[in-house]
Image 1 (cartoon, rainbow, N blue to C red):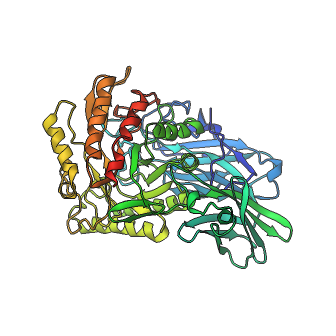
Image 2: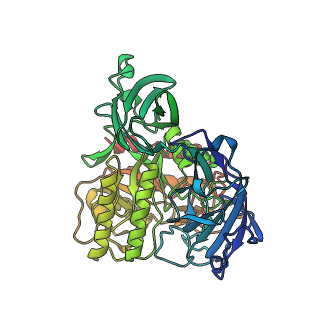
Image 3: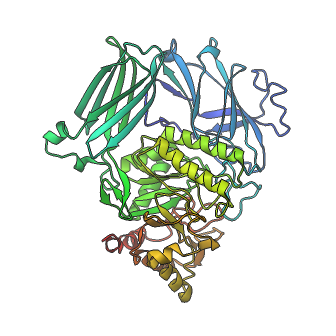
Length: 597
C-alpha cells in the first residue's frame, strides 16, 4: 500500500509521476554516511521502506520507534517518455526534519522544516536510462528547539506526547514543465465586490506570452480573461457576480463558500506562446470571507457559530501519514456526521489532500503548526520560516479561516511577563497578517495572549460526572465575559501582562476530553466514564455548560479520535464510534441557536 493520488490539488498538471512505494533504506546511527558517500550508486542499503510512511510506522514495513537521528533513502526511477525534453521537478510533500537530496550522486539541494513541501529542478543532473535519487535525513530526536508538535523527545510516548515521525512522510513525485511555466497561483476572493483576484508568478521567458483564464461553476462557464504578459508577476481581477451568475438571477451571495454550501469555482489557466499551449494548470477557489465584528466571528458577513473539534491527524498504522486519501475524507465526514462544522488541526500541518476534501465537503479548518517546546533565537527563525512556507502552500484553500501560530505558550514558556517572548508572539501575529489578509490570527491559543483576533480559552475543569460542585464552577466560569476573562485555567492568565481583551470574540477552544475505554484500549482522559450511557450523559453535561454561555461564540471540543495513550476521543484511534453518533449530533445541535441571538 502507498499513496497514489495527485498530491497538490490547488495546482494540477497532467504530466507527473508518483515516486511513492518501495525505497531502499538505511539507519546511520554513527552519522558516517556523508563521509562514506552513501549517496553514490554503489553504496549498500540493507533495508526496504514503504514511502511515504516514516520508519516508526507499521505501514513503512520497518516499525521501529527507537531513536535513529540520521537515515538514508534511495530508489531508482526512469523519466517517462512523455516528460522527456522538459524540465523535471522533483517534489517532496514533507520530510521531517532536515533533508539533503542527491540525484545520480550529485547534491541538488537541501531543506529544513519537517512539515512543508519543497522541490528541486533536477533536469541538469539526469543521465540516460535509469536515475538514482538519494535522500539523507537528519531528525534530532531530543532537540527541543525544533518545531516538533506532539512528537516526543523521549523514546516511549507518554502523556500528551506521541511517537515521533522521522524522514519522508508525504508523497514524493516528479513533474514535467516547460522552461516557461506558472510557478505560483494565488486566489483572493472579495465577496463584497464580487471579485476574484488572481496572482500569477511565471518563470522563464515570459515576455509576450499570453495567459488565458477560464472560470466555471458546475461545468458552466462564468468568466474568461486573456492578457499578454511582460513581467513575471501578473495580477488580474475578475468580477463574477456581475457577469453570468448575476444575470441568471443567483445574485452572487448564494454562491459563497460555507460548510453548509461548499460552492467552488473551477479554474483553467493556460500559458500560450502564440497558439501553442506551453503550460496548463487546473485549480479551484471559493468565494469566502471571514472577519470579526461586535464580538462575534462573521462568515460571509453573517454571524457564524463555530462548532469545531480538535483533530490531531494521527493514525495507528501511519502516525502523521493517513493510510489512504479516503481516510482523510472519512475524518471530515465523521466529524460532520456528529454535527461539527470544522476542526482545529492541532500541532500539525495537515496533508494538502485533507484541505482539498475540507474545501469540497464543506468544513472549516483552523491551521496550526508544530511548536518547539523551548524558546531560542533559532526556534524563532525556524517557526517564522515554516509559517511563510505554510501560507504559500495553503493560501488558496477556502476552508482555512484561522491561523494559530502558537499554542498554550509552547515555545514561549515565559511569555506572561517576558517582553522578548511577547515580541515573538506579536511578530508572528503581524507577520501572518502581512502575507495573508483573508484570515484571522490567534496569538497564543489557550492563555497568555498578546494581540489576537480571537480570545481563545482552554478549560478542562468540568470535573467528573459526579463532581457537581466542580461542574458548577466550570459552568459559572463560562457564563459571562467577566468570568471568562478572569478564569485561570492551568493557573495562567488569559492575557499576558501588559495586554488585555479588546472586544475580540471569545471562544472555548479546548475543553472536554472525556476518557472512555473501548475494547482493549488503555490510557487516560481529562475525566472518564465506564459505559456508553454515561459517556453520552457526560458529553451532554459538558456541552450544556458551553451552550448556556451568552459570551462564548464558538468552541473546539477535545477531541475527534483517541491517539495512542490518550483515550479521550469521540472515536477510537481506528475511527470506530464510541456511541451512537446521532446522539452526539443531537447534543451539538441542541442549544446553539440561543447562543448567537
